[in-house]
Image 1: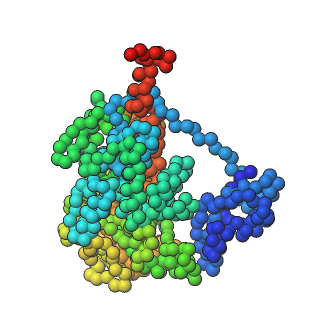
Image 2: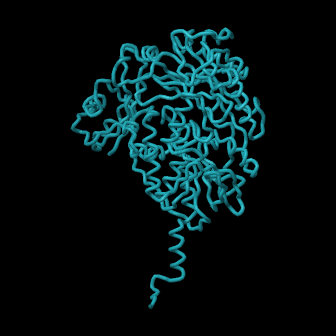
Length: 551
């Protein structure tokens, strides 16, 4: 019998491979009664700073008598693991006009294309940016000089926006497909520890290799990938897309278009709206990035255990309210840096990034305030225009050369311009311009951040330290619109169009976007036959199996 046990206490000094005997002691059974034991989830429990440990979930196999003992112990949270039969993913029978096209090679597009290719659909993937190595060079030039490539940058290119982040894999999505996503990432080179960590991450420096391996697997399975190929037109009848590649426009026939373009593809939003695709504005959040010393955070969260090698860099997640709006920290990057993430000229957008080791001097996170259609209007693209306005203001406040406006927390709380920084130096590249962020944030956002800083300083002592640095503007927490779709993953207005991922308004991170891409691919597979299988069926209809053809 297989039993799942939650919240076993695991000392930081007990390696995973030797934890069984200590777990058995907590379960009040003999280790010999457990025939197999594996850790399925591991989270840091730092509530008691004098006894920081892991809270571990495990699955174990044992006899009925031992299982009854464990299940009957009121101190434990244990349950029987029932075997689950996966429903086979069988192809549909409808002929597929043209080929399946996947627009975008971020997490949603990568995993949709992989599943389609695995099942023989040979998808064509369109990516407006460059392959990840060339893209990384363009991003580095942007961070060093402020020179932006509008088609291949932090937002556009192989791997999507998540490639230049911390590679966070934390998700609230409760879906069996999450295991598929994590498993494929491990197969592509990710550390197997992501399979059990409560807050797994990949690290920006490792994502390049992982994304490349995923793309090569798609190609090995029969998928085709076009880089520097932008989706510039969509004609639902008879079903074709227009692609601009190498300065030339060409049309491709397709009966199924998986749209995984990401939320920075604002020109694509406008093109879809002109084509009559149903969409609606959606709430999101806007604010700034805050930086603190990582050493301070480690000490605050872990106390005397802060230097233990199994803990790594500490994190936080804080929430509050201001004027009826949610205020919260978002996308926390331990030991990381604040990065330039604009995808268009004349804009400043900030994001956070960490390398795998998370060994930078500063910790950073977004401090953001909820915004909704009541703030910017109920037209589908109203939220997009709202973001562009504040991104442009940040650009101007930074001096118009790509520098980001930044401010000490003490100055922000006092609403006065910063003239110089002190012990905490901003990490944003290509650099910052000291200023007053009240001039590049909506009033409700600035007021919400002010209230949040005070509230969070009560929750985490020192969060509102005077020399902490704020850099603006963080405007891409999630898409400002949703492309409306039904339960079959298809557009409500345009059957055959599958809007997915963060850009369509249905995901909020790498894992949730990847899961959404898998779901869209499954919908396509269940509906359509592969080109090969349809051809075989057509031949079989003309020449039955018992038909003898004589030369």
